[in-house]
Length: 304
Image (tube, rainbow, N blue to C red):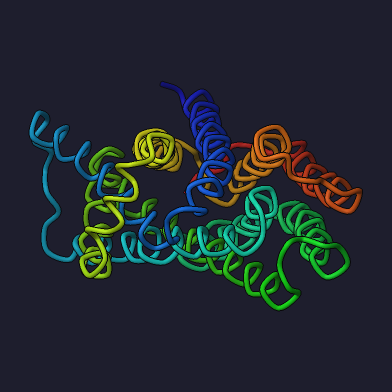
C-alpha cells in the first residue's frame, strides 16, 4: 500500500475509534448509576482481556522481550490504569457530552509529546488549530459554573480536572503504542497492554467483587452495557486506534481525529440520555470543529 493511501486508512481508523468512544461516554454514564467507576473499568477490561486471550491462543503472536516489556508497562499504566478510570470518574461528575468534549484536550498533549519524543516537526497550523479547539473546551468547561448541571461547582471542576488528566495520560498511551507498533502488530500491542492493565487493577476489585457481580447479573441492561464497553469500545475501539497509529505518517498531524469523539458523545447524550445542550456548549463545539477543519485544510503526509 502506498504511503498516501496508508495514511488515509490510518486517519479513517483513528476517526472510527474516536467516534466509538463518543458513544462510550453515553453507555458508561448509564452504567455508572449502578456500578462505581473503578469497578466498571475493571469489569470492562476483564471481558476484553478474555477476548484477546482467545485470539492469542489461536494466533500465537510473538511476545515482548527484554526492554520491550517496559514500553508495554508504560502503555498499560497510562492508558488502562490511569486514563480510562479518570475518564469514567470525570463523566460521573459531569455528563456524557461534557466528558466526550473535554477529553479532546488529548491532541495538544499528543502534538507536544510527538515533538519531544518522536522528533516530529510541529507545524504552526497544528498549534493554532489546537488552541482554537481548546478555547472551545474551556468555554464548555465553564458551563458548569453558570448553569445547573446536577452537581456542585466544586464537583464539576473536579470532574473537568479528571477528564483533563484522562486526556493527558491518553496522549502518553498513544506515544507508547506508536513506539511498540514499530516492532509488534497492532493486535499484539493492544491485547498485551489491555491484559497488563487489567491485572494491575484487579486487586482493587477483589474486596467487593462478589457484590458487584451480583448487582450486574441481576440487571440485563447493565450486562449489555458492560458487554458493549468491553467488545465495541475496548476490543474494537482500542484495536482500531492502535492500527491507525501504526498506519499514519505522523502522530501530531493525525491527533485531531480525536475530535470525532465529542460529535458522537454530544449527539447521543441528547438523544439517549436527554441531556440539555446549551448555547455555550454549541459555541464551544463549533470552536472545536473549527480547529479540526483548520488542521485538516493544511494536512499533508509527513514522515518520521
